[in-house]
Image (spheres, protein in one colour):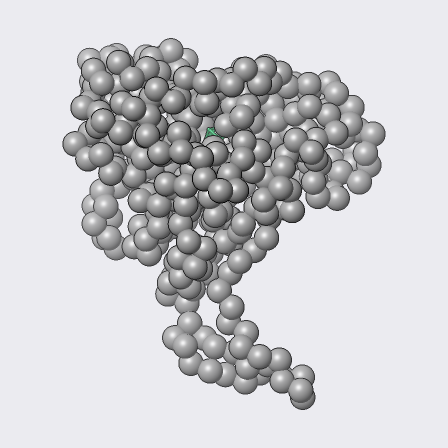
Length: 374
Ligand SMILES: *Cc1c(COP(=O)(O)O)cnc(C)c1O
Ligand code: SF4
């Protein structure tokens, strides 16, 4: 237990795979090869609900199911509402498409001058390096292309992407994502980072990855050495619930930090996962303890079949408000909505500015609701 709440922490280990030699368990390739990928395999490990069994029928041609043994161990197998389980096990509702939902909710395709590269903001681009992830999140914004369940047939056009970046001198910031960049081999990671570093106007290099959460074994000393060599690298993790903060993740984060990687976190606000003040506070506290700065809290994008995950925007604002003033300022992420159709990220934080007065002063409200004039 962690002294400031009652959620168990730093525990994980081999769980149901205690019989596996530690050197295999700690090998990321073993974890990948031993992923659970079908309903029948999953059912051998835990009872499924009717909604889950039904959900698997929809998965086949929408978004693959996969979970590493490490992440599987975090599931409460007796609880169908387990927040870890909700994120990765499909349910019936995933097949219900609601008003305004699409397969490309933030309009990436139309801002894509080269396949696998999204250029939405003037000075920065998103480069998609692979279509694979270690586990698949049921609410994934990029489910049209990750896991290739829809025959999108995504192949990173890295040469074309790199040429585009080299030809556009206004690009100073490259975000490498996917899929998950850290599933590539050390050689490929080293090669892409070297080629990006060789472009003189690219001054800021960052990676988005959920691998430290799903597959902390991948964060090897050799990988950290590569990241160090090409540093500074900024890394955005994707951690949604305090229970994901295992000892293994904390150790991986420490290896990354000691290699000079700057760590941030992007959470998605998800119903039944983290739409709760206590859960969010314990998450952000654990992040700080692992040297991970909360960066963004996203409203869940309107990807097809995700209505069961969506939380009213006002709840997100209330949750941020519950943190402000009551915990370390470093612990508070920006709440953002990625505008449908491709408007980019729009911050929607609680407003503490009550009024602009005619003499140039402002009326403010503090975290306790008390008014002040400045
Ligand atoms: C999120 C995103 C970025 C990075 O945005 P920041 O606010 O700078 O973190 C860049 N390009 C695209 C297409 C994005 O979706
Ligand atoms: S790790 Fe990221 S890209 Fe992969 S399925 Fe989850 S949200 Fe999508």
